[in-house]
Length: 358
Image (cartoon, rainbow, N blue to C red; front, side):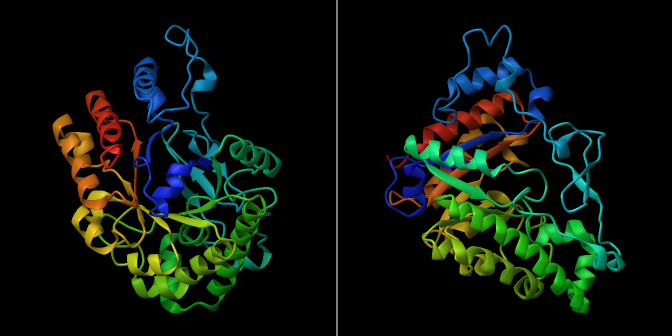
């Protein structure tokens, strides 16, 4: 999400958008798990979801390479990647973000010699080109759009896990290890450097993506979250609010036990998963309070259900979570394994119900 439209701003601000903002994201691995021409055909048929998709006339015969996403270094199968913090990533499928298998601070003895990365050069996982980002933001303004900045996915809790290892981190929190506070300050200072640079470039919204939930419940206790992680969020969000910018937060998994704390941090839009948290629970606890950026199911109905069940799911989400005033966005992430007839059904339903309140 590099830019957002005026309609999306209106949805987040409850200012009666013309339609529900919808995003269909195709994971890079899909391009070698599905036939490329089939995916390109579906994109060409769904102009609401892929408004800026303009394939050349000969793409059916010889698809241009630039149409396809580049595989990031941390998404390359069998090629371990070391990020700017010294964490080692590995994956088994090209295009699927790897998992951290090497934790540079698994032993606290390494902390004294540890140097954090420079936010002028990296976002934490890869290089960051601020002049290019500046050009993109100014170009977006000239096209009537608004620039968006984002921290790396997993900028706080997950970054601490990457550095220490999950079990070590949870023990650190339980033992109230004093060195953990020093590490938190280091991680937070780095992210503030990223946030401030985006604000200086004039973005309209900053994204704070992270995964906090498991299939059932969060990955850390609410007490540990409030003690160690929530203050990081508050410190990182404060500059954005002081500048009058919107705050978008993401987390996969069951985050119902943390939702109250997340919203109290000053989140304007929260991207969370539908079925793992429960559509009715989301409606009862979040509707009208913040903009719900609903992450459409990828585990059950869209993978194993019928096109009719998919249409009903998205219809019910719009009815229960949306309103003419706004406060609802929808996103679907396509990963390998979803039947193509279901892929089409998801695209059809997202476009159909985007206009539900129009």
